[in-house]
Length: 335
Ligand code: NAI
Ligand code: ISE
Picture 1: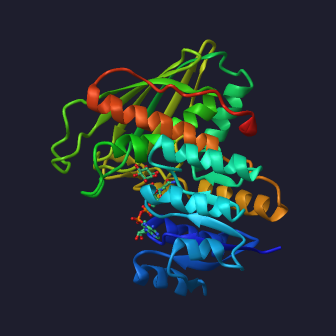
Picture 2: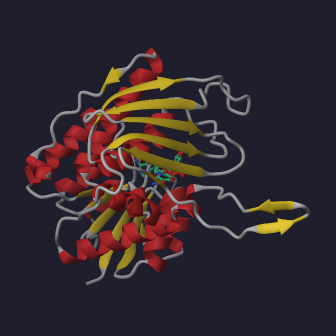
């Protein structure tokens, strides 16, 4: 069976995923797209022979759309995901699932009412080979009980539209998910420290930020988010356990010796860094959708839990205090 996909939002990552589904992933075609910018939608559709529809609701309801991909702006995600669940169609939603825990809760309620899981969230790091190696080491007891983690998330620059809350909502949300997964634990509290800001930022932005998490089991995590670091895109993660440590491998690059220097290139964006993870994420999703079984990637509960933590992080940014996330117990539906 070829899975016919409808895409809502054809900006940067929407266009990437349309190309990916059409050229790199087997078993799927993009048949319909929409964007509030009609020209952008037409450009994305033209490349793959899809048709342009006027709204996300039309994409969801189209008779030939089997599954929906949501790649619009974060605040628009919940509405499209809720529409897909109401139509009983599998839906892949880029992160964040929602921009408030209340909206994420509405998605959990809708899925429960539907009676089976339909939602996958685009936390692609769970499909990255390096993070998977770390998960294997931690789960097999290779470093003993995890005690601490040290993480780094650096982007070279961000546009003027990026604001201080997005350090948590848009950027740290990846570590929030991957740490929950690696440590198999929920985040119970968060604090956000704001060092001296770099001069190389738009005036309204606090950058860098340091996020301190406590896991329910007592492990502690520090995360540096620095989105104007200038030199490149860098993702780091080390977990320290009672009997050893495990570190995210560096992506190998050619080592150059020239003009008295030893050098290796630094990646410049998430497209390069996580290309293989995105491919695996989508191939697995398409294969599972085709098989008619609920998808096994990060689900609506994971999207909800991440949003609860980012909501707490935003409160922590504004107060400077340690903020309890108040995360509730995972419902049996998502066991
Ligand atoms: P973008 O701004 O390039 O594209 C978003 C598109 O959505 C725009 O073309 C906009 O016109 C459209 N849009 C907004 N509201 C809409 C609506 N209601 N209906 C239809 N179209 C609508 O943004 P970008 O960078 O592509 O990000 C999109 C989403 O993907 C964000 O949630 C972002 O956090 C996520 N993302 C995930 C990444 C990852 O590493 N997994 C990397 C980059 C983005
Ligand atoms: C972007 O939206 C992403 O998801 C990238 O993976 C992340 O590195 C970046 O900071 C976000 O803005």
